[in-house]
Length: 265
Image (cartoon, rainbow, N blue to C red):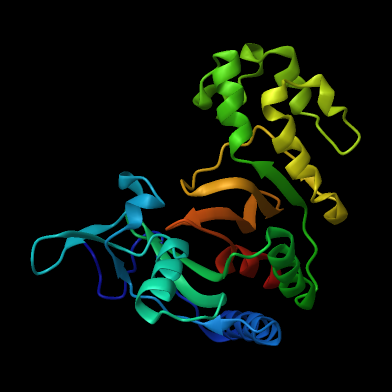
């Protein structure tokens, strides 16, 4: 029996103190974005193009009045870029949003996000960290590269699934060395096909990150370096570079629900 006051698994309910803290976090983020000259955007809840970002099984789908397939917004990045360059035709390059995304079967994920057309990933990472610093939060930063596990799979014959599951007994010796890669590692120890991508990761050394070259990302549209900011087993934030309609852009999302676990104790 489903009662009128029941909420689905994965849906969010905030009230009292927690609702206030959530609002304060979003206010601080808005201040940072406005100080850094970002424009705000709120995108539609429904989208025609979510399969470019996520797998079909992750989407909550329905149809429009002409029976065309659409989905509840599962990711904001691609929609923001396309709406800005094609519908708004705005000259502004830096945009932020505070809105939920939705994943099957009934999961609601509150996000604070930013996209920067033709932007620099290191600079937008600074914005991401600035927001967390304003909240007096300091978490481990992990830097990876989308190309490295793909190339490692081709060179070694180890499947991406095996790399993702860290089935180390299948790894070549150079792949095992990638598991302990840091800024002092000699990149000449690795195949030439991945050295340039390791160098791109090392460009983030100013942030003192942990490097995970073999991490396999779930999002489809990353095309280069990407990062995660974590707290225990929760992803607090992640960001990366991508190309939409031949425009190289960068962006990040802060996962408000995971941040609230720590802020609220």
